[in-house]
Length: 217
Image 1 (cartoon, rainbow, N blue to C red):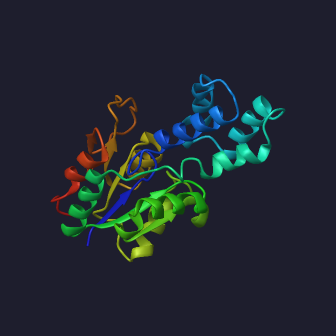
Image 2: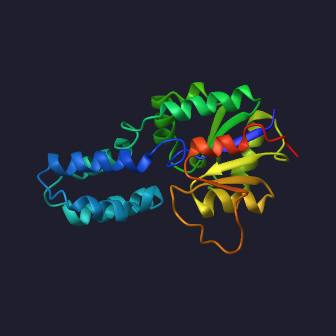
């Protein structure tokens, strides 16, 4: 069974939409300006900012009027409680499995938070397993996290694919290991000059369609 490694946030699930909805509710619940959503979103940097940095920034801005515990709860569970798996993505994953691919989620993040998303959406029943950076001690694009994914399911990296939305973490990581990849662009232009993905797709459903039926090499 060839190995297919898939990113979680903003690839399999729309993490940003879930987080923005949680922040909007947080702001409304504490009587804060709804226009602050753009400020929090920028601070969060699509989930790539360290939780401690986001917490510190929000505490500095809101700490006099809002309990720090409320900010921590937002950052710990806000997106995880709201992420959803699109029916089309579920169908695409089922098709990949039927085609013989061994699907493994490879994601950066905190173990409890990422596993909550995986189980909430039912992804735990659609993939063979998952590898989370906090648990293995390595973050994408480090080759060790991709090797850990392959080792976990007892498959070689040779012939594997990587699907993800991050040029650096996903596509850069794949390129460093000589793996084929599909970048989920969400209609963004590719700007990295040092390497390119094998394919570019607008969304994860199209990305999976690029891989299904492709023989391993």
